[in-house]
Structures are given as structure tokens and as C-alpha cells.
Amino acid sequence: MLCAALGVACNRGAHGSKSLAAALAASRNAPAASQSVPLVPATPVPTSGYAALVRAERWTDARVALEALSASEQAKPEWRFVHARVVSELGDAEIAVRDLDALERTLPALASEIALARARAELRAGPFADAAQFFDQRADTESLLCAASAYLSANSLVKARSAVERALARIGKSKHVRDSEVRARALRAQIAEASNDKVTARLDYRWLALSAPLRAEADSAAEALERAGGVNRLSKSERADRASAFAEAGRIAGTESELSALESAPGAPLPVGRMTYLRAFSIYAARADYEKAAALFERAAREDPVTAVKSLFFAARSLSRAQADERAIAGYERVARQFPKTAWAEQAQYLSARLRFIAGDFDKARSLYDVYLAQFGKAARFGSDATYERALCALETDQPAAAAVGFERLAARGNDRRTKARLHYLAALSLGLANQKAKAVAAFSEVARDEPLSFFGLAARARLSLVGAELPPLIA
Image (cartoon, rainbow, N blue to C red; front, side, top):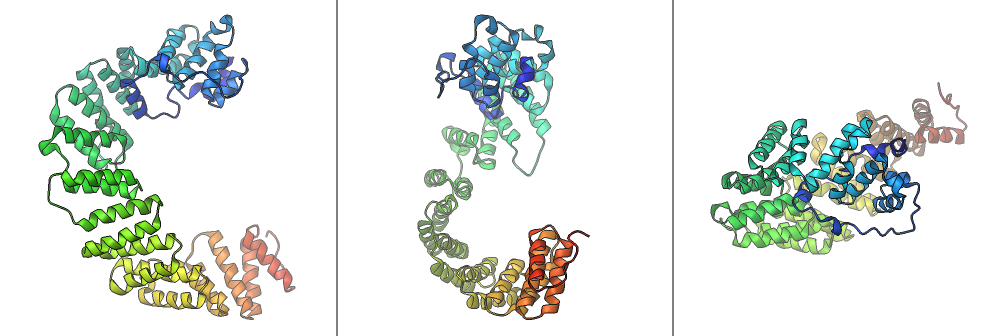
């Protein structure tokens, strides 16, 4: 059978990799069949073997191959089923509806797949009432959202509102913003607008604009609130929150747009330094121009002394990423010196040592790690990393006995077997360099015995062979 040849490709459904949001948008702005993707394959396509093209999701080539078949082949129900799937992927929902019409009669084994594919095509091309009825009967969250969209397209506003309210009831409340809730609220706002329920529409628009600022629905919501004017407009503080979300996502244009809108928004003025900080962070998070980000962070620190520590820390961080390590170290040391009791200071102190370590200045790095570990003790946020890197510095500065102590201390705290094997191996190597041969042999033997097939287990056996020590059994 044809469907057996297509396998999984026939059963994925018409949605493919498209989101429901895309389906909802398409249902409002479905292009005519004449505006579909042109059928011009990149390379000549054979008129047979289209199943492989469907499996590979080469939809345009698959359509060319299917439609090049003879009229007798195209009359087969299997051809109609596959053709519907292909044209759905290409956006020709009207043709898909025609292909799938009453197809269950000749392919009863695929009745459920055909019904779902037809309803998805009807959601975009109509008849919308039929799609709405199909999805409404299924009653899961995704189907209810589809039903609400179809009812809205059919101008059955009461039924559309009922379906979306049931979807929201199923979604429930959560501390985290979920994709389904974003789509449901955007849909309910559209339905409320069409029903002249301005209160509900404005509430949902405000939720979208502030709770899901990075979604495309949020941009439309913010624009709708601005058009509504008056008390519906977003305040300066709310615009700044949206700008912060864009900045953290590295979306420079979005950040600039929100900061521009902030100037004319209602509410009390915000510190100039905060806006400069957001501009700097958007560039930093976008990895676009670290030197420029550093300059803006330093400017933000001057403009807003209250948050200067954070700005100065990220100025140093930007310089580090710009490969300006000496300037970055100076920046970190400034943060640690001027704001010693802050969490930023601890992180700056550790990163200052780490940059010295990366640069190969092991003596200086080792002393900085010692200061950091002595100052913050067991509560050190980066204690394990600092101890490990300090031990490596000890190896590089001819202090192997001290390195062995550090590696063993970390191994005793670790839980992961591979990590413990690596640390035990490094401790054994350090003992060997410290001329403690008996302890080194015992430590290498332990690694080789406990993790015989790991890299460090095999490396330990090689070390034992070099000194002529007895090898433990490969596998006990």
C-alpha cells in the first residue's frame, strides 16, 4: 500500500512543524491558491518515487512528482491523501480540502487521519463551521483553540468565546508563562474586540504585552493598547520592563523601540542610567560589539550611582569577551575594591583570578585564588572551580604536593564517577611529580581498577606500565 511506503510521513498530520499560532494567523490571512509557492523544483524531479520526497519533506518536488503522474494514478484515493498532505505543507489549503472530501469512504483504515487533516485544512480555507464543529468535539486544549479560531472566522462569536474560555480553564494558572496561554489570550482578545468587549480585550492585551513581551502577539498587543489611548497606554515603568526583556534576549532593535516609546509614555521619569544600561546590555547579550557595550556600561555607572556596581561588573565582563583581558582585570579589581560586600564583588574577584590563569600567569593567579578562597571559605560561590584551577596553578608552579591535596579534596566532594576518576588521576599524577612514588602507584592503581574502560583508567594503566608497577586486572 502507498501509505505503508510513506510510513511516518503520512501520519505526522498537516501541521508538520508549524505552530498553532501560525495556523491561527493563516486562518485570518490565508493566501489564495494562485499565490502559493511556485512549483519550480531546484533540480529535475522523477515522476516516480515521490514517497521518498515526502519522507524527506521536499514538498515542492513531491508535488511536481505527484502531479506529473497519469490521470488514472491521480484518480486513486491514495494519491489524493498524499497530495493533500503535500499541498497543505505548501499552503494550498483549498486544494487539500478538495482532495480530502469524503475520502474516508475509499480509505476507511485512515478515517481518523483524513478527518483531522481535512479539519486542519478547513481551519485555513473553510468551511470554518465544519472545522469548528470537528475541533469542538475533541475538547483538548489545542483543539479548543482551533475551534475558537474557526468560530471566529465563521463570525460565531459566542461559540468562539465559549471555546477559548474552556481552553483557558483547562490551561489553569501557573507562575510560568506557557505557549498555550499566550495563544489563548491573544485569541480571546481578538474575539472580545470583535464582540465589542473592550474591557476583556484590553486586559488580555496588557497581559500579553507585559507577561510575554518577546512573543509576536505581545507586539500587536502593545500597539493595540497605544491606539486605545488614555489609561490603556503602557507606563514608562512598564515600557522599561519590556525593554529589559528585549535587552536580556539580545534584541537590540526591540530594546531601542521600547526605549523610544518610553519617552512619551505616561508616568514618572526613569533614571537615565537605567536606559543606558539597557542599551548596553542588549548589545552585550547580542554579542554584537563588546567594546561599545563596555563603554555604555561605564557611562551607565556614571549616570546612575545606585546601580553602578552592576554596570561596572558588566563593563569588565564585556572587555573580557572583547579579549581586552588587562582592562577587564582592572575592571574586576575595581568592582571588588569599591563594592567589597556585594555578590558582584565575589564574582569579580574570582574572574580576575581566572583571567590570570587563562593568560598563563600562574603565580599571580594562584595567589589570587588563595585570597578568594580564604575570604569566602566554604560559602564561596565558585569554590569548586577556584580550588580546581588553583590546583592546576600549583602543578604549573612546581607545587605538586599542594596540587594533590586540592584534587583529592574535590574528589571527596564529587558524586559523578567520571569526574572523580579524572580528579583521582590528577592527584596521582601530582603525587608522582612530588616524588611520592608509592602513593602515586596506589592512586593510579585505584583509578585503573575502579574505572577500567574510561580514558583516565586506561591512562592510569599506561602510567603504571611506564614505572614497571603491577597492573590490576583489566576488568575484575
